[in-house]
Image 1 (cartoon, helix red, strand yellow):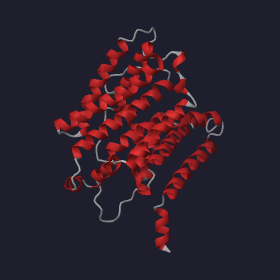
Image 2 (cartoon, helix red, strand yellow):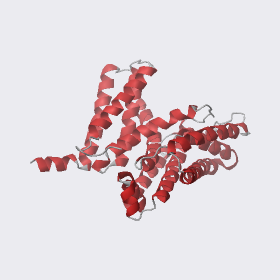
Image 3 (tube, one colour):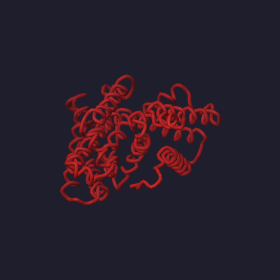
Image 4 (cartoon, helix red, strand yellow):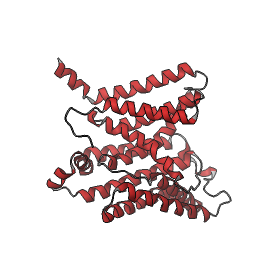
Length: 320
């Protein structure tokens, strides 16, 4: 009987059901305490549109987080890729916006991966320096925007601001991640490196190559996130002084869900639903007029609790 129960507990449908149950629970809780300010149909659509942006970035972060790496330049890339897309949209319309965001994001990933591979220093140190560099470049990018409203999209380029195109782009990104994780060597080798890098090397896996690929894929997904972010906000502003770092953490929260629910075989749905849960919590606390500092504290505490309860290591296992 216990064997059957343990098998059910590791089933992907059990994991998905647990995630959906948590989402429904938080919705009910906040709807109970803030019935007029939370959870209406239009608000839920807004929560979903916000969460899918973070989920796309969370999918990208999964490729490096699963290997024990981190990248502080994600937020700066979102800003710079968005501004490059806006700038090119002045001359090439939608093609400029789309390709500007995606190619800028991917090129930054190539640059990050190259520096990490060549400098051989911790990814956090490399990417903090790159964050400052990218923030400075973003300031120049917005300065050369010929529009009277630099960094702002014109009203004829807002197709990705709403349904169906924002959902189509996000769903395509989720399908791409699922394909890479389940049907290519990239997913297999990233998981192997994350489980035991030394053993992965002895198996003949080129660890440095796949860490490089991880950075490229991360920032390709960040480019997609930039497209959705700048469209949803109808523009973006350049920031300096590490202010872009704030944009790192909402996608990362979804990645934590993906890592925690990897044992159920559903990292991509876990990232998507996890981001929706995070957005529900944040907006629910806002609806209850909770101060921002307490909001951040509660959101972080809830996230840690969820990840801890769903990702308990077996006794004797070394936790990295």
